[in-house]
Amino acid sequence: MNLRRDVFQAIADPTRRAILLLLASQSLTAGAIASNFDTARPTVSKHLQILTECELLKQEQNGREIYYHINAKKMKEVADFIEPFRQMWDDRFNKLESIMKKYKSK
Amino acid sequence: MEQKTKVNAENGKQELVITREFDLPLDLLFKAYEEPEIVEQWMGTKVLKLENKKHGGYQFETTDPKGNKYGFSGAIHEFIPNKKIIRTFEMDGTPFGVQLEIYEFESLTNDTSKLTMHVIYESVDQRDQVLKLPFTQGINMAHNRIQDIVSKLK
Image 1 (cartoon, rainbow over the protein chains, first blue to last red):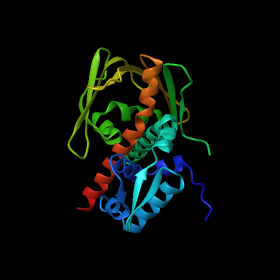
Image 2: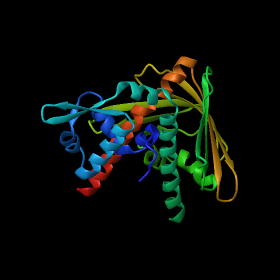
Image 3: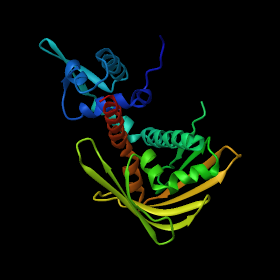
Image 4: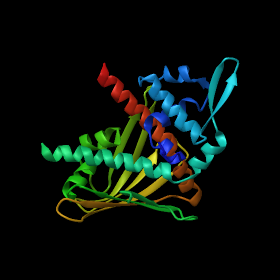
């Protein structure tokens, strides 16, 4: 698979955004991260892989465990940019559109 | 791919313009801004007050999964059905100030419509601060969505 791994693709997904928030205040192992979600563990691993590939997360070996932590420098690049703002409105408007489409069919 | 939602924020200006084309007739798009129950659904917020008239006001309240409440409110300056809303917006208890929002609704075809949202901030700095915010808001929304899904599983 040759998917383009850029940061905006990474943060377009709500679960990945939630993972970033979780790691904003602490470093955690993959297991500890997964325990915060109802999503299947392999799915969480896949999200972690994507976030790591686009450098939003860094891995750190601590004894036997691998801890994930936020790459602050990369996060700042993203936060400075307008795309998250656009994405937020796009999400909202998509929701509005789908709600009103159902409303119409009532 | 052409993006449905566009944001135009020029460097050094204290305003921005958001545009979006909808696969909805104009009256349905406007209704989504007019009816409190519908606003609640797509904004993911509780509507405490929504007076759709000149000199009216509105108050929204969002609760995060931890139970923290966030208030949003403003004054309505103009309300022309299917055409225009002018209102202020502020996040209560934050340093982000008051913004002026001008919403223009237009019909494109019988089944499509367009919204232009012109937002003016108190200063360039304030606009830029707000632009950096949604990353966090997006995360909150993600949390809410996760919570929704979880509560449906129960």
